[in-house]
Each structure stands twice: as C-alpha cells, then as structure tokens.
Image 1 (cartoon, one colour):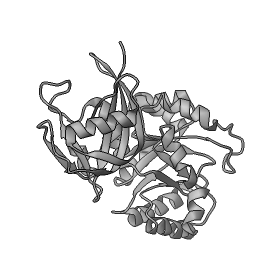
Image 2: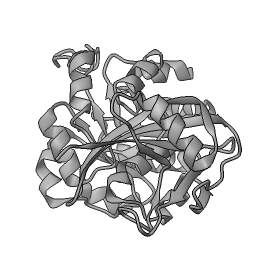
Image 3: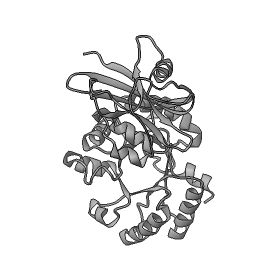
Length: 316
C-alpha cells in the first residue's frame, strides 16, 4: 500500500492561538478536528502543496512557515505521511472556503478537541516550545533557583530539574520551590522514582533511558493531560518511547559534550535518520545550542535541549 503524503499546517495567529478545522462527515475520519492541509501531488514540493491547499481551504497564503514534525501512521484502510509545518504569518482572512467549521484555540484548549489518532503527536508539537532547558548538575540550590528565575524572565517555557547527585530529600524540596516559580509560566519536568509522581501533580516527568526500558511495556504511568518525556539514544529506545506513549523525547548526544565525555556522539546525519523513525516531538541534545535550532528543525526535530548552552545564556 502506497503511503499518502499529506501537507498540514499548525497555523498561529498573532495572539498565539491555533487554527483548526472540522473534517466533513463524509470524509475519512469525518467529524473529527484536524490541522488544515491536503495531499501533496507527485513531484510537488511540500511548501508549494501547503500554500495551494491553504489557499483552497482557507483563502490564505502562508508567508512565514517552517517544518514542525513528520508523522508516519498506518490506519486499517490507509497509510499516511503527515508533513506538518508551522505557519506564523499569512496574508488573507481565514474562513472555511469549503464550508468547514473553523476554531481558533489556545494550546491548552487543543486537548479538548477530538483529532484523528495520527494527530496526537502534532497536538504535542504545537504545544511545545523550541527550547528545552535542563538545569546543570553540581551547583547549589540557591544558584539553581536564581538561574531558573533568570530563565523564566527570558521566556523559558519548558524546564527540566536535573540534579543527579543531589540527595532525594534535597531534590524534592528544590522541586517544590521550582514548581512554585514555574506556575503559570513554564512547564516543569522532574526526574526521579515513579513513586514520587503523586507528590508533584503539576509537574511532568522525564524518564531516564533505564526507566524507559523498565516501564515501557506497562504503558503510561499517568493520564495524557500530564507531560511524559524520555531520554533516548538509539532506535530501540525511540521505539520503546513510542510504545509507552510518551509525549516527547530527547535524542542524544548529537555531538561530544563535557557532561558525558564517554558517550559516542550520533552526529547530525545519524540523528536525522533516527528522527525519520520517530513519530514524536524530539529535542536534540548534546553539544548543541540556540544557534542549532534552525538546523534541528530542518532534520525534523522539535528544537534543541541544552544544559550549559542555555544556562549560561540566562546569566547564571
């Protein structure tokens, strides 16, 4: 069965809200909501197909767009490749040119709409930022707190509290404080035993590769409204992450790092190849920084994750 290539758009308004459309009842997956777009013709560039489809469906033309995520999904009756781009500027006033209902919704409101199964990672990608800040190890709690404050002031929206050498009690106390700082500003991701999950209901959880291997077969440890991520370093671990139903992953190390000098870097080419097998938003990690975001987008990543690269940029 030939895979149907579809171009789709996460269209953002000036206020950050996202435009979604309802599928006609007589179409495949009819009645569900979707991100606008349509089929890519043989030999047609994705950007050209996307512009054509958005003009036909919504009477707009994208002027600023970039790759967001690619999803390969097999339905019982068809196989699709969803080539999703984020559109942040366009000309024209969008309306349902084919009579389809439209809705402008916030990132959080996306969770209240029913999409086709293949769209679940797109909803996650639409809600996630391009940068994932990971706190550095080996610094005092007071410095961690001031660094997180500085990061929040500069717009950080996704922060992982990583402190592998801290005592459990110290980490848990710090997590409470940082969770308070992040409230209403950023999503905090914690690391640690799954027994702690109930104590930090507002936090997401970032699994180590070891935890992923241990728990993947059991599925998600909590409902889908709460962020779940995993550290991956190989095709096997990416497969486990998809099996478990995590929302996003880090893929590392792309390049050599001071944090893990013993780890063999993947390199950009291998990272790109691994991303073609991964139907999840993925942050590249290891020897990358803000200057690499564009390159990460071009090979299918959500963006980049960083420890020192982002921490030092936040004045701490």
